[in-house]
Image (cartoon, rainbow, N blue to C red):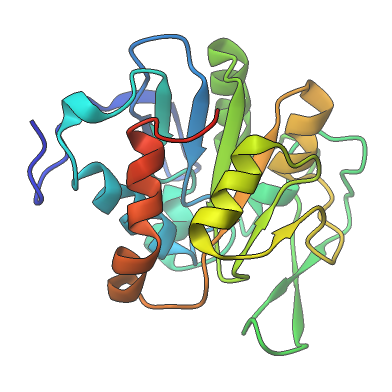
Length: 230
């Protein structure tokens, strides 16, 4: 049973962060069709809270047995309030892809401003323990699809959109894009594509958690129930 104030699922550890925080997830009880990942950027806590609220909005027995859940892929960044991990590395630019780059990339300060700040990509591709652990988890789980939760660009991003991305765009009323509009070297999405694992990015709009709870959490609930194409 799920209570609004508690998570009714059993957490398991798949690794540890730079600061030795547990990297935890809720594994599926059957073959993994969908892995949902929140909180890979520490400055996007709304993704973690929204996914948690979705879980806590329904009975645990109603959550699809083929969905795996990661509430916080970057616990150190979430604790510090930073986009990167405790080493200042953007984990979503640290995956071992063909386009990974050693030079810092840019990140936003405010989404509606042109100011770009440099952020590290790691000493080498896959250098960070959070990235390495997530890669190992994905390889061992072999999900059919990954859903990455981000914000605040208010869109659905999928380089090869199919029924799932189209459903998500229609459900949320947000545009479906095949590219985000700027380079993302070393990203989870690129890595997944190179591994043959489709990655859809659900970019929340720039709204507070209380508003997201009413506007975006219901869509997450439908996904958790399995009421969507996978």
